[in-house]
Length: 430
Length: 164
Image (cartoon, rainbow over all chains, first blue to last red; front, side, top):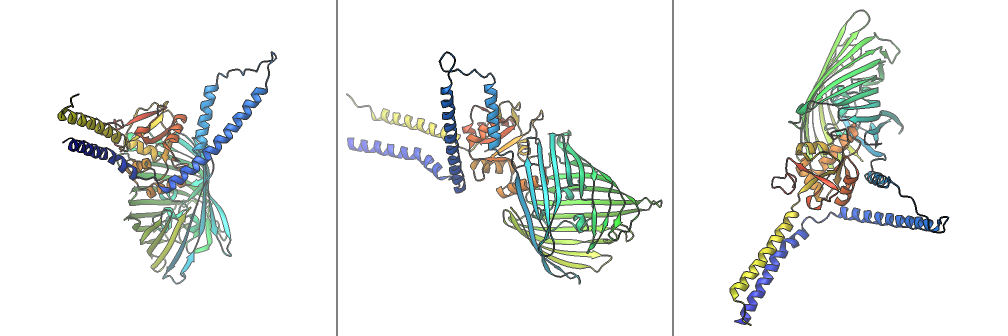
């Protein structure tokens, strides 16, 4: 009886111990630290040990120096108390925290792409192309001051590369409602021009809509401006209104479509761009906006022929919804050129595009339609005329920072035969 | 000496077992992954909505009230705290989060992504030292030098707390 009782109590103790210890044993196996974090922690520990050793050595040196100081009475000198010692300590702690957070320094990122393109247009040959390499640098100079530059190395023949300063600007952000930047930047006309820069890795499609390409590739907008830009939030509650005001000189030299040797130097004056954007908090991912740009031009062709001076007004509106898996972009633009040669002739050139895409894991199919219509007498855009057509394709992110795209384009053109083209492209960034 | 009756010995054992289970339950509750939003003690804010927290960490809100610049702090990729934040605050996977910040920085809308720190201790040290800093740390590891914000009106120990 006594042995049985001891066995029973012993068994109960063993069972209760197992019950109490099992959650701890399970917790030891769940969520093991990633190997990368272990290595990072080890390196951090070694760095801290080295820093501690250096600090101790410095402290010993200071103590030794203090011990050598002797007052006139022969006793060791007593250093005066510093009334600001606690605030200096907190400033140095903040400085150390800031340094540790790497709030300074220059951050570098490179964007590149390689593509294979071809079409059924007689002049186009199927070929590999690597147009440019984009080097982006930025630095956070203080809590409110930052700088960035975007240098585009445009590849030419004979393995040469021409560096072009696409953007360089200094930005000061005073508050949520006001910040300004000076330098060279992409004009905030519409949405796409300032949302998509040189890095094609950030594009869903292989390229921008043809009329929104950079002016060196026959795009229609004064895409870059040197001047000053102010922007910020407008107190509007959940409506999420933002404003943008830019003034500067747009240096637009627009290459002719399908003939890079010819261009028009728009010889822009002082341009002004104003925009209003709404990003309602109730619908994260939704954005709508409107912009108005005004400028004066005195265009000259590449042959030195001066065209009629004209006023330029660009109206742009956009509405989009995008999140990490779904994207629906819509943008409409109207470019108005008013001749200032006494004739008061006005040319209106409308353009729009829509892009729809959805991701299924790493694969993102997309569909785009683009349209542009300029009169054949339009002095700046006569090479384009009316062009419109769909593009369809797929993007596959085979790595975090690299993707593969395949795109088919069909283009109807009232000045040329309809064309069909295909592009395969790999984009990357590092 | 007479032996204690079996009934009372069994009762005593069950009482000890119950106390041990209560202690274990408290330990487990503290390890349930609740993230606290901590800010500098001089920050006048006492609570924040989940939507506003998301705006902070996505760089849409760059200033506290009073023009104090926001400094957002995150744990390094792969850390449990970062995974909870990605799921409950950003609704993004880690690659999507990285792409978002590459885009934002390249666009010029931000000069850097939230700083990544190796430990909760260093994150809280930074929060205590930088007036506009905010970090997400396990609620069980909050130190007295920082202030915990309510999220949607709940503290980390409250049943409806959203950051778990």
